[in-house]
Image (cartoon, rainbow, N blue to C red):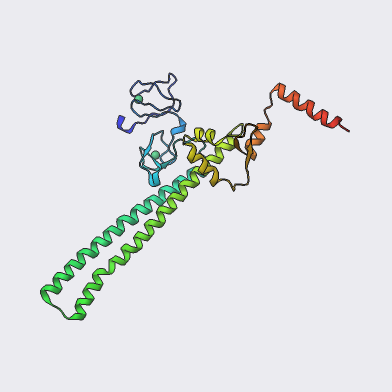
Length: 253
Ligand SMILES: [Zn+2]
Ligand SMILES: [Zn+2]
């Protein structure tokens, strides 16, 4: 069943089990599109499955279940999962509202044509004719309402997807042992630098986010938790230097 292009755990030899091609660093096969490893686990169907274009609001979608996905499960937390599930629900609501709206508009059109025929053939009184036309046009109000619901649900989908990206960015920064530039964040999230910069703008108000300009003039980002971890594993030389510096500080009058 190669059409599904599923695979599972990362093969030790780095070779695709489906077609025998070599895998890239992310466990993806360029030959047949199969994917391997937990980084490709779908938060909706929980299966290791490739994500492909065609999801709501320009997002990727799971090749197996169609749920909206980020390019990789790296940085996926319960928050990311919840946001993606919210995006999935909203995108279904938007689709359903569009279908309902189209059906109601179609129904109204058919009823209007039928009314016109009845009026033409039987020439009822003006009051009856107006009543027929008004009744036929009634579903149009429902169609209009459905359209508005679809627009609202689409906006909610886009918002939930942004939430998912932002939560993933924060999780990656928290897990990092050093401060990350926008480019490094993009690499870890398997996205482009423009998107990473947008994400950093989205999470700029997060209290735990820290920014710093390095000596080389590069803007780097971290979180409280990430920083705490940076402080922990000093290697021997750094630890000695740190101890010397602090005893020098203490020795100062
Ligand atoms: Zn393959
Ligand atoms: Zn899925």
